[in-house]
Length: 85
Image 1 (cartoon, rainbow, N blue to C red):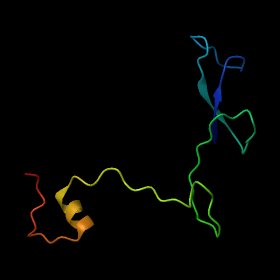
Image 2: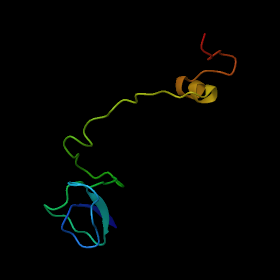
Image 3: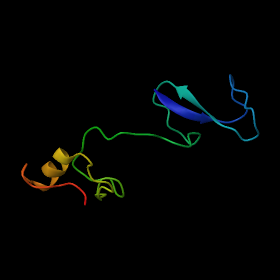
Image 4: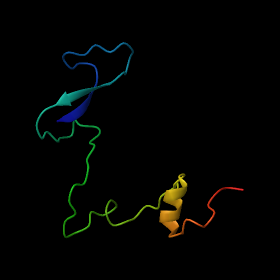
């Protein structure tokens, strides 16, 4: 099941404002020039990398907040104090 961003002129949709778009569910594997956005999830990594997608690693921006997860991330013991001061 894919979703298509539909503009004015498609059946079963009447926009309230000029230029307003709506997501419409589309069954099947339809990929053509009319689709403006395509959301995908990589399920299995193959032999080759996809340039610009799987060849780079993006670092995490936010760290954990829970004390037990901070200890797990930095390999700390329970005696180490991880509270903010």
